[in-house]
Image (cartoon, rainbow, N blue to C red; front, top):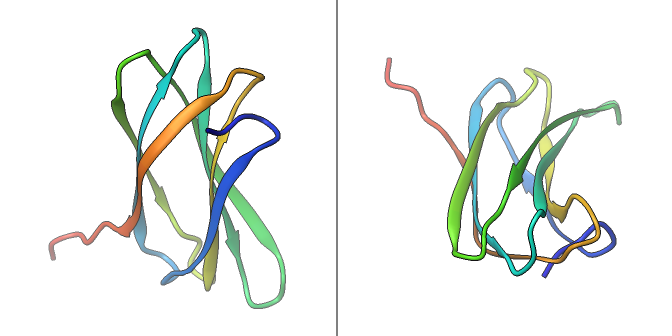
Length: 103
């Protein structure tokens, strides 16, 4: 369960300039509720930038996704799934993968 104060996060190595698909399965017991898919991109000099998408949820499990492109000089990302409000949201099946583009 996630909400504004309780988040899921993980630091992952990435390749700068690549698109990444961030997907989660979510549901909420009370509407309205939202979950925020958030990525903080980290550069070697310590600077950061942010990508995010807020998505609504329903009482039944749904899969939501976002595609974010890493800045060219980013070396790792901290990926967050967090509630965007006071209502708790159930999260499962989190995936953050490079979205390879055919040449």
